[in-house]
Image: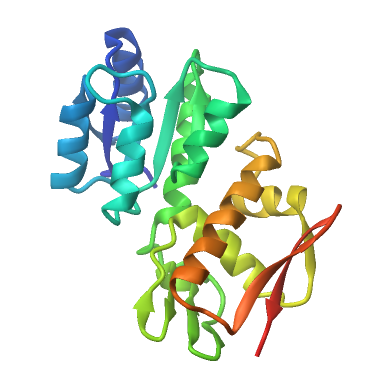
Length: 233
């Protein structure tokens, strides 16, 4: 599945880069490297990648700023943050900015490979795997095969992870999902995270629904339980 995939590694620690390159090249992946933030951002904006592994602490421009700018430019390529920090606020900030996952250094090659596979499996739009039928709520259309949601024909520009959360809820209107259920069904066993991750993704989905002037549906908070897809009209 990873064979032929192209990964950009933005990391200034040469030893970490060597470990990543050796790990991913064993999976027949093509690895491109940038050792500072400015070079990494330029490569990410001008070339095509299937995945970006992005260190947080970088010379010139940090990983948070790179992640923010890529998402602001409309890039939906999966981003996995590489961080030596273990504080929850750093992880949550990265997810708020649009990162899909994170790996805390030091990490094992097996963990890195598993997370890369999971991120690209979610993003792979050409696999042809059944993803469920198209959904429609008024002017809102959800295309699971294409990982795309449109309001009145205009893309909502959801990241892959935001789309999966949105589509999961939309397939079951009126059903309440706990945060743990959403984590399990969207991130899977490879991802161990705080349930705050779900809250941040829901917040961004709501922002994009408002930006798209979508009044047909909403995501309702069921206090003390989780979230529910709500059909409003």
